[in-house]
Amino acid sequence: MSTERKELFEKCYRQHSKNIFRFIYFKVNDTELAKDFTADTFIKCWKLLDKGEKIKNSRAILYKIAHGIVIDHYRKKKIRKTVPIDSVDEFDLVSNEDLEAKLSVKQQSEELLGVLKSLKKEYQDILLMYYIDELSVGEISKILDKKENAIRVLIHRAIKALKEKYEKNRLN
Amino acid sequence: MKKTDLIKQLKLLHQIDPSDRVMGEIGKKIELKIKDVRLEIPKKENNMPETLINSLKTNKSWVFVLAFTVIIIIFAGSGPFSDLSKSIVLSTRIAIAPNQYEKTRIAIEYVKKQQYDSSQIEKFSNTLAMADTQLSQLKLMGEKGKYTTKQCKTEYLEFYNYLENTKKYISTVTVEKEDEKAVTQLKSQMNQYQNRADSKLKLY
Image (cartoon, rainbow over all chains, first blue to last red):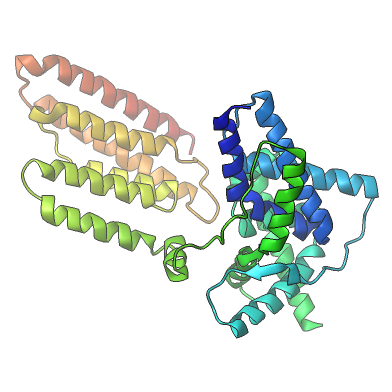
C-alpha cells in the first residue's frame, strides 16, 4: 500500500477511533466486544484502502462498517432483549470540570444511557449518531441507507420517544 | 423535562472517552493484523478550552464572525476595498445564517437595496444571480421548525416584484451603444429569473 494511503488510514484512526469505540460500546455494552469490533472496523477500512477504493467521507464509511458489524453480531446471537448496561468505568471524562462535576456527569450519563438502551434499535442508532457522535443527516442517510427526509423524521421520533421514557423513568 | 435540556444531556455523552489503556489495546489488535501501520493512542478530543468550544458550537458564534467583519469594515470601509468589504459581509451573513430561508431573506434584502447602475451592469447581474441561487434552494413547502410555505412565497413575490420594477426602470434609462449587448443580456437574465419565480408562485 502507498505511503499516502497508510497515512490516510493512520489519520482516520487518530480522528475517529474513540468515537467508533464509543458508538459500538453503547450498542453492545461489552468492553471486550467493543474493542474487538472497533479493531475489526478499522481492519475492514484498511482492506478497502488496500483495494484502492476512493474514500470521500472516512467518518461515514467507518460508521457504516461499525454499524454493519454490530448488526451481524446481533443476527448471530439473535439477541432480542436489551442488556443491562455496564458501568462507564472504562471511560475517562474529557471535561475540564472538577471531580464532583465529573461524577455528576457520570451518574447522569448512566441514567440516560439506561433509558436510551430501552428504546428500539433504530432510535438508539439515530440518537447515538446524531446527538452524541454529531454526524450530519447526510452522513447518517448514507450509513443507514435511508433518505435524508426519513432520517429527519426518525430523529424527531427518537428524541420524542427518549423524552417520554426518560420522564416516565424519573417518575418511577 | 424540556426537549432542549434532554438534547444537551445527550450531547454530554460525547464527553465520555475511552481510556488510553482501552485505545492502546485496540491499536495493538489492529497492528497484529496490519503489520505496516503504527497507531498512536489518539489524544484527548478537546485541545481548546471548553468555553471556546461551547461558544463556537452555539448560535453565538456569529458574534465572533461579525466582530471580525466589523474590524475589516473599519479598516477597509472606503476606497477600493469598500465593495470587497460589502461582499465579505454579505457572504459571511449568508454563510452563517441558520437555514435556507434566512440565507434567501438576506440575499433578497440586499438585492432590493441595489439600484440599477448602467456603469456596473456585471456587478448588478452577479447580485441577481446570487439571489436567484439562494431562492432556488428554498424548499417550496417549507422546512419544519425552520420556515413556512408562506415565508417562501413572500420571498418569491419580493424577488418577482423587484425584477418587474427594475425592468421597468431600465426601459426608461438611455442605453449607451457600448452597453447595448450587456443590457440585453441582463434583461434576458431578469426574464429568466422572473419566469422561474412566477412558475413557483403558481404552485402555491
